[in-house]
Length: 198
Picture 1 (cartoon, helix red, strand yellow):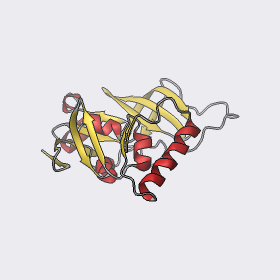
Picture 2 (cartoon, helix red, strand yellow):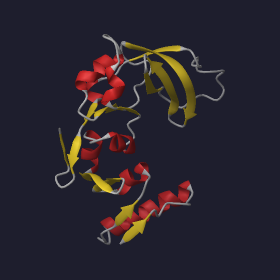
Picture 3 (cartoon, helix red, strand yellow):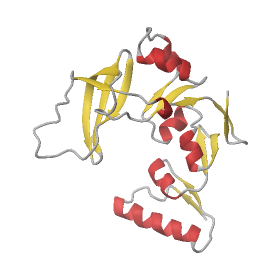
Picture 4 (cartoon, helix red, strand yellow):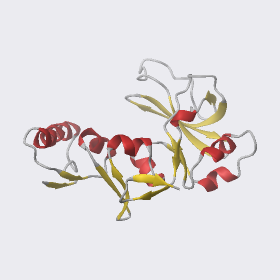
């Protein structure tokens, strides 16, 4: 069965119900389902195998965990939800001791990516200046500038609507860590093999 953007124009409840139907087709009725979507959250909720197309060309083919653990390029890194994605040119001008200089030797030929570091966890090796704060159901999404790099950060927990504020506003300095194990070097892909190459 081929479904092209089946969630388009559906509300949240309709999307969840359709996801259950697709899972039942796949798991109970054993009907092979090919699903085309631009929504990574929904794709990750039911897909067993991914084929990521970038400009009509295969960028990745493989299992969901492999896709998340080894995104091959900036497009794929953003698709899996990694909020901080930098190409090598963005890291070249970072002076010694900067976040960009620390990331540079850890990057692959296509750059580097990592998720949103959590504020208030760890020693706070890096300092940034808040550019924006946005509430979400999972917590606050914060964008800060660290030298020349924009860095996406987060706070844990759901914001309390009764609270007068989080203490985070534009211009506020914040400290955070980037765990080395969270880094995803980006390289090139052999679409037939589904693995990363330099």
